[in-house]
Length: 180
Image (cartoon, rainbow, N blue to C red; front, side):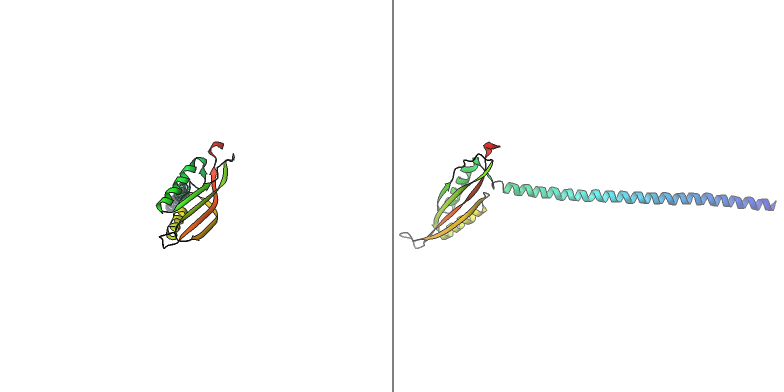
């Protein structure tokens, strides 16, 4: 009987050992599966995070582009902006106390986008004409000057400082609103 009892105990211990090994192995497999699942979720979350950062960067860049677009909205003038352009140039001339004449060819094209010739003659003291030119550069209007000619004029009676004459000849780009 001792032999049977030791065999039963040995079989029971072997069965318990196999059951424990089965559960341990199953737990190890489940842990590996969970680890892979967590790793793939982590990668997915990192991708979403990077997309979110990219989206934030894109939104900021879009805002910057919108700001610049608003700043440069006058690069191509509409045919209705002719008076605004001339009025703005006249105000600038008055501000810097220079005499100015503007010759702007009429916009007659039927195309949606076109250009026309503009000639501006400015006369005044050197520092004022230079300030006028600097302010003209700051304007939101885009005028492509092809000719810039500066000449010295003799001093007028009662004035010690000589005056200069500035001739600007260029092109203004237009959008014909009526042809949209």
